[in-house]
Image (cartoon, rainbow, N blue to C red):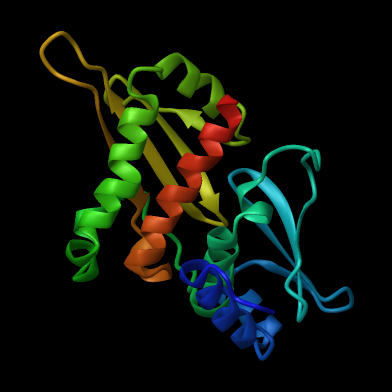
Length: 213
């Protein structure tokens, strides 16, 4: 394969190669997900929808969406890299029910706060802060997403098996622009690296934007 976009394709090829030697039964147990040894397929949930992931051939398919729908997990190389890293390095620990900010992630949260602010907080704020009705309508299309009582508008949703996120908005007025916050279920800090949490924010925002189209 000739690599043209090094920023996206080099990491993808690196983790794809490592995926070929993965022990799928160990990965399924580590992540608390399903693996069908006969069919050689993992089954995961992402943004409320079911997907199959082949092993050792890395092919990702949605099981409950129309193929014509925009799908970040099947169409985006960074999303596929995120999924590969999840299967290779993730560790599922049940959350306590508490949610944390990105800055609260031990050590690495501070290191990645700048890209997180740019790729996630600012993108969320200015993508939906003035269009909360459209944001709400999009969130209602995500299976399992629920409106919660925080800020002026907030939703909680499952990103991937057992890991939850919250998008929170405060409306602007004549003096102040709108603002937003992203919270993660506290098991994220054990299951993902901080850089993957940035990608998680980016992918979930892209999914909501696609639902507004």
